[in-house]
Length: 367
Image (cartoon, rainbow, N blue to C red; front, top):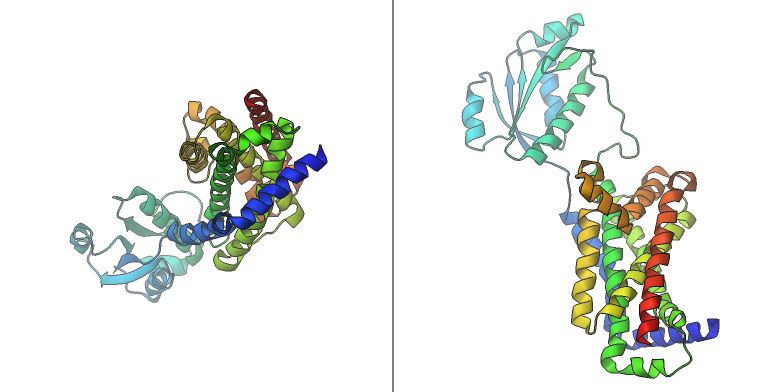
């Protein structure tokens, strides 16, 4: 069995070597897509147009304004002493946010009395407004522990601590998801096209005449693409570290194990699609839709699973990227060991085994 499986794998590797365009696409495309999407897709907000209305005129109020303008998030575009000017500035789009320092701010701060800063933001873009408010709260918390946000009652605001991503850089959240998204799409499409290509060229009939078992044929077809996917994954993680500063804090060995389990599931799904499709065009479309949309929308890559309706949360349990993302972020960002993500790895192994068994059953019927 092993010799026949390896013979099919060697044949597929030779085919990949002759078809250099496909090989280049499989090795280079994930890194190219990571490069494009990594820079284009970002939740970070920078250069927000800020107005400062200083009703106090003290050194403390100037220091508060400077704390905002010295950050990369805000650009000071207007400065005044009349809050009535803010309406026109917001209406015309001249500013996106405003900081209002009340009269007596400096005296209250010097006396240790709780004081307040008012921060106003344009909420027409809700997502951007929420991000800007989070940045503003972080800056306010760092000015002084006796400042209250908007004069709200309660204990003084302390300086927040952010673990694993202290700069709150969205790239450290998005890039692992991008790696999962790209690997899933490329692995599914690669194997789906590889098997369907045999059907279109008529070589599948020749394979049926050989003593190859269905499982030997499928393993021989998928092993080369598993190797190519592993090389491409290593390049993607290296690129994520070099360009986006995404570290791998955990074990590289465990990262490789989890990635191979994820790739095996994607390759198995691609083989299953190939048993149902009769042309490369159909296989490509089916692989793209079934791999791209669930990974993008239902894996927790962009939208939190906890915020989804109950019916959708149930569906996410059959999306392998859901489990891979949890394990990947635990290993890459937190440096966690298998005691925290072993259930995710088990789910990936079960998924890969199930789709491979289904693909084998379909192949047995066709042979």
